[in-house]
Length: 500
Image 1: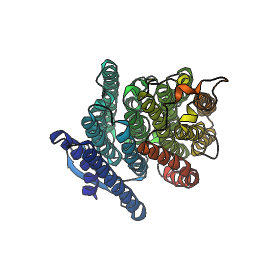
Image 2: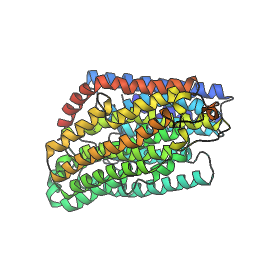
Image 3: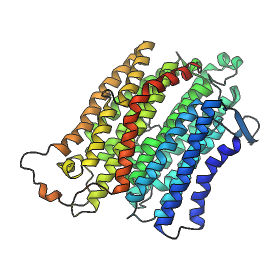
Image 4: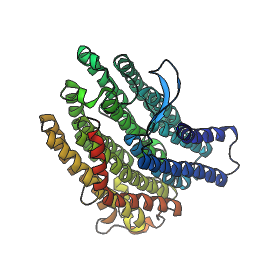
């Protein structure tokens, strides 16, 4: 199986590199090649996950040692990697379809799709990494592959966003590296359910290990946009919308959350962290981030920045669940990662479609919420999808956002500590604020003021077929999750119990 895993990682990487060596002759052949490669890889990933699920083939596959046994290049498939890989495999081809129409008038398209395709392979490398060292290598490679995407327009603003992204990522990488070294001295780097610390070192080296864990939490937490290391994410919104959708819903931020989950439940161990100062720090910072980012989203009129802060808040929902250091909290956090991925990518697709449609008119680029007055009548598909995704993300039943938020709240109440209850209160406050900052966009589009002049919107229409297909596909995914959330929660609860 190791060669199959390696092939799934290498094929997108090699194909992306080949686009620099021999650029495609025309747009059609490039789009076809990118779509075929990503779709085939996605199908094979899903088939692999089904095979693993049915036959339990989740062994440890080592290619070779780099700096001894602890620092080896190795891969595996387990329950957590299956969730992350499935999210990526399902959403990536849909994002490609969306990007083909969105990018058709942009410059540097070959460069864009080369790095976009390479990023797919890198994210799969993170997902299938069998130890912290392998994950760390691909995690840093993710920064290098996504940096040109953030800086795609290569203007002053894009370069500033790229520089901020790089500096934050380098700082996070340094902290995560120190955390990895500390863990390697007192345990193994191989991901082990329940933690990989040596029992003899847990008591003797507890203070150092807790410091090491917190360094890793904040280091990997950079990509998970934890406060105060979140500011790069709204700034990166200057990138083309397929990139921001990739950053905010599929690859980078989920990779950050995934890495924190690996570090906590498979590295230092949730049972080791539970009840310590480290857990209190996690609970306090995630609860604060949830409310802070929701408040910032409400303040901002710029739609993509509003959605960016929404992402910052929702990522901390996931980390709040993880910070409970319980099987129920782990399951609830993963459940929200699934729901948020489907709902948030739909919202970003809508924001990008509005930008795309207005840029092609005499109105010019429309980026602010107050500029979308009366747009719902002219762009019914965009606003229908935005409304459905908004209701889901607010957490109104029976949509999937309700199930995941309720699961996190239940896990927090079950724990019963003051900080866990504070986190539960933060969820309630954030849900209210989410309703305000998302439904205000819906109201702006559907209910223009009396006497509003619709004639100035004559040029505004819904996007083309590829964008509309992408919008409906992610909407169908979000609605379809309604029926699978109870099953997913039971599976994740059973899996989470094995990690304690």
